[in-house]
Image 1 (tube, helix red, strand yellow):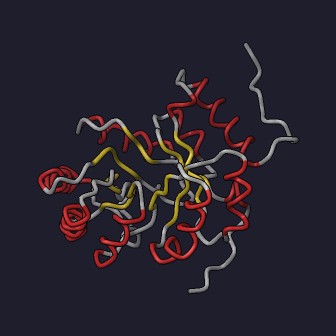
Image 2: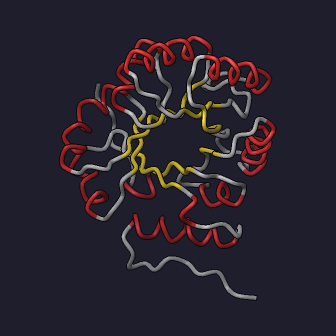
Length: 230
């Protein structure tokens, strides 16, 4: 039996994460290129983001519309081909701004947001792919659509013309995430969805083993986040 290959200590954080993704994909008998690495740059300044862009990273995630508006237009102008994902909870009154700036939205989780995004996309003439966020651990303090309401939300999103491409989740902290990832994958399969946004710095390899197509990695790339003022 072959021993697992661990990333070299000489690798940059980005190269190390990419190698870990590739290793997990090989174990799962999947192609590494089928897994999208989203570098979560929330609260990090442009100066911290540019080195990753220079190293070839092109997909980034933010969780606040206003913060993204302040730092990303200049970065995108410098480097065409950047794809920007909104990974935080979206307020309905920010739907127009989100549709204008982001290339993918991961937090579609309630009927009022379906309505707001549908109208914003129609007005902008721009269809932005969305993940439905599922409250996979039934946590009252956390955003996401309750599992029992996923079918209805998917139906209303499709009626509104929103391109739903998959499901997203954030498992409960301090609990083994594998069962939650497996449950999300089952819910997605039951509804004919094949894309899964799941897995962060501490558990993305487990998520890949259970079918993640998009992993959202922040601290493993940037280190600890600075406090956000604003």
